[in-house]
Length: 77
Image 1 (cartoon, helix red, strand yellow):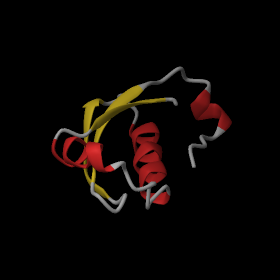
Image 2 (cartoon, rainbow, N blue to C red):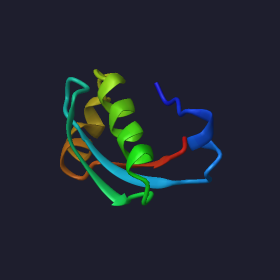
Image 3 (tube, rainbow, N blue to C red):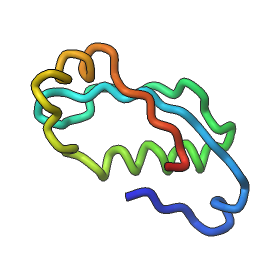
């Protein structure tokens, strides 16, 4: 689901986002830890996360951690 317009991809931007995932693979919340500084790039990240749902169901042993602590994802992937 991650796709950027070529002109935006050439700008060497990066960001980190914390994603909290529920037991059914739905995103519970998101929070930018390091926004890119470019609104269009950051919006593309949020669109990617939204369109990728539902994510695969997490293994039982990770459900608590993913919903409570979240996972940090860097973009570009």
